[in-house]
Image 1 (cartoon, rainbow, N blue to C red):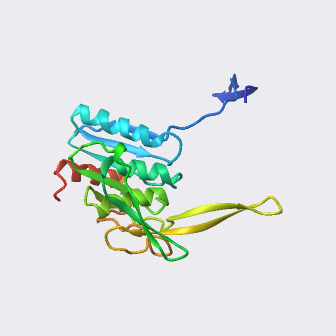
Image 2: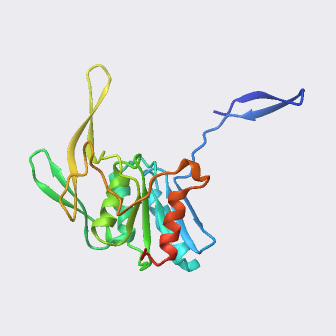
Image 3: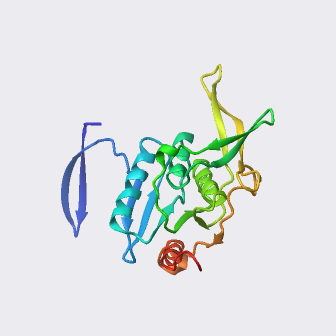
Length: 229
């Protein structure tokens, strides 16, 4: 970082040298925008850092702009910090259980909302997920679905929902041990394991031939209909 690299572009037989300085690039964790139909859109790429506050600020901005509803896009989100997942779910859910944690001793503990994060927004909400939505992203989707505050659309999630604890090994390696698994707050069904995960309320398969993001278009249409189709 901070060193210079020289690049030469060859365009139509002409060499164009460019010198650039190497630097650390941190992609944004949250992208928010408002579509033409006044539908708010929030994409969360990963659950770490200040991501929960970024989502809360995006929700407030969209509320002030008068959106008719919003899409929370968690597709390809691998998860991250459990606290970030809880806080983002708590933006939309108040005074409720998001999921249940089951430890190796079989004890079942509710994972409750952080009500300081709640943002009142009684408008249709769609959570978009796919097969790569994992861990904390699944916790958010499961909590929204179980508490009836939104509709989950897209494809069944990864089924990789648990709490891991790192253990250092004598050879310098690291072993991640799952110490708790998650269960749906409404049905009690296990969310972790092969064939598990969050099954969307409205399945929408990816259509690569559509030439557009058909899942997002379906979510937008659902929002504009008032969440009734």
